[in-house]
Length: 273
Image (spheres, rainbow, N blue to C red):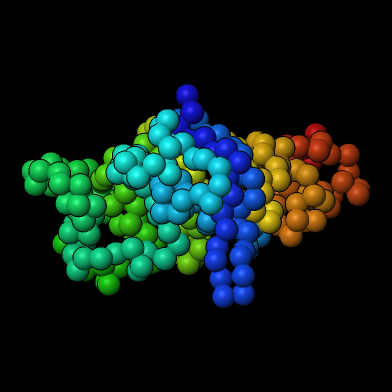
């Protein structure tokens, strides 16, 4: 069942130097419970597209439907935002309270949830992101990865069906990136629909499906194996590929290797054979 459908989406920014086309005829659909990644170079339209999923931006032309509702219809805004939560790359810009549990409760208070339900949901959300022991901490005392987990807890507490991650690991060190990706995978396993925007190709390779954007359009759409094992095409687009896929591509000059190698395990097994 589709949770998101995008039809001929165009978005134009008005700037001092004239109109800038950020999205140009985007079409895609995402099923409930799916984990998709969106990749592309800077300026390809990824973040602009992400902000349309919960009506932070509205189409210049075309339509987006979330859970069957047109995001352009003002009467649907509340329901759309109840169903689609967003996590951005800088947690400092998302944290609004001086205490962790108050920050996680912020969205629930805006929804008018009863206080006893808020406490229950906050505790469950903090437990889901492994931050239960920090609910009385000041966010300023936390690491970047911990702050990002608090931002994610705020979305988890709202019990949205879809979570859009717009480069959530961009400002984290490798350990922090691994922790956030592990959390994202757990949320997906629990039934959340995940839309994951990233510049890290190893992260994108964890998705079930990958959309490649270029100049405001969806250029490719396929499984990670279909997308990333075409190394020459990805390089032409100015994008990296997972390390194992690139190493396999180089080794093919001297070894007979299959074309669909994506992971280190697949590469090791192919070399062994």
